[in-house]
Amino acid sequence: MLIRKRSLRARLLLWLIVPMTAFSLAAGWFTHASARRTADLLQDAALLAAARVMASDVRWSGDNLVASVAPSTIEIVGTPEGDQVFYRVEIAGGAMIAGTSAFPPTRPAAAPRWYDARVGEMPIRAVTLTRPMYDAGRIVDVVVSVGRTLVSRDAMVASLWKPQLAYILGSIAAAMLLVCAGLTLELRPLARLARELTAHPPAGRARIDDTDVHVELKPLIAAFNACLDVIERQALTQRRFIADAAHQIRTPLTLLGTQLQYARRQGNLDDVRETLLAMHHSNRAMVTLINQLLMLAQAEAADYTTFEGEAVDLRDVVTRAVEKLALAARRRDIELAVLIAAPLPVTGSETLLSAVLANLVDNAIRYSPAGSQVTIEGDVQDGQDGQIAIRVIDQGPGIAADLRERVMEPFFRASTEEGSGLGLAIAREIVRAHRGTIALRDAPGGGLSVELHFAARRDE
Image 1 (tube, rainbow, N blue to C red):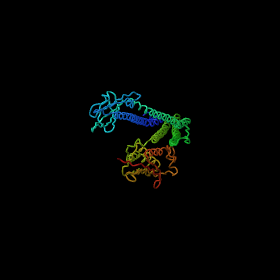
Image 2 (cartoon, rainbow, N blue to C red):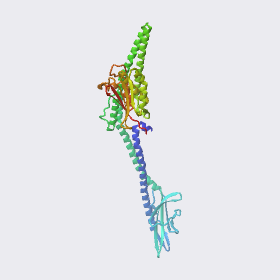
Image 3 (cartoon, rainbow, N blue to C red):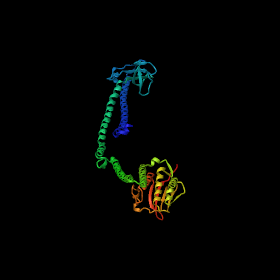
């Protein structure tokens, strides 16, 4: 787990070491098996040669068979390692003619047969063959067996196998060293990139030049440069937002300070009350502004995945917003009409969506003339799996086409009416967080139509 998380070089080496180790084990096993087969073939050939010589030395002496085994025959299977040699010459199913009684007898074989056996506690390799002996019309099978201990065989296996194994292991070790050196050289571009990034101050982070880097690193560098572009744009937007917010907050604070100084100089109680009332209005405007700034920050930080499982009926949200603003509408002699016949299920945050619709309806009431109507329409387009549309329509002055994008920027106001210029900016961010769209259009008969589109929620 630590290797997978911390070191690219270690991971690459691990991917190399594991198959190389498996290859080494397989190669060692095959090399040992090949060496043993070679040693067995040589030993078996020597045993067969000695057995044939012994069989050829068996002869008739009168009615009996005799075998004379010369020392030179034993030397055929003799070894410098001092292996013990055993032999046995016997009549098939009968008496032993010559040899070592401790050498266990074996059955006759039509062809030479090699086998492993034990003499006492010593393992041996042996061969047996049968020679028919003819005399006066009769046939007697003579079984000749020759065996030898395994000291020389094992020594030959080691002499054949160990050099090959050493060669394989040495080659693998050399390959690993070369790979380590190659990785160190080939990973240098990453170290160079780190140095380049460290050399630039965070405030002016330069883009990385991918001219001399490997092809495999170019997508990474391109993505990193694109990320820097996004970060710079966001930082610029944030700095501009902070500057605008500071300016917007400073104005009511300055006004509040002026009103306090004025109130201190007043000797008339009625003038003091009037000043305090004005201070109350200034304080309420500042609280409203701060609440809108907090809502905008919350909207910008909202992520669809955080409320992906929440179901919201926009018809209920609209109904509550209208009930909340009904008194404000009556004060301005404005009629509120809701034209939503069916539920409008979407996925999202009920708190944020309520803020959007309440803000849009409040704006429509504020900018509509007395005696007019504000209409909120909603429907599902293109069937149940399509888009849900909400339209807030007023009969006010509307917004010029060339200003409709700018009015959704923070603190921009298209008119001199009282307000912070944050309402539509908040609406845009919340709608965007819900993967929806917002558009400003001319309303039929004059006025403004704010249209919201969301994906309809599908219950599994």
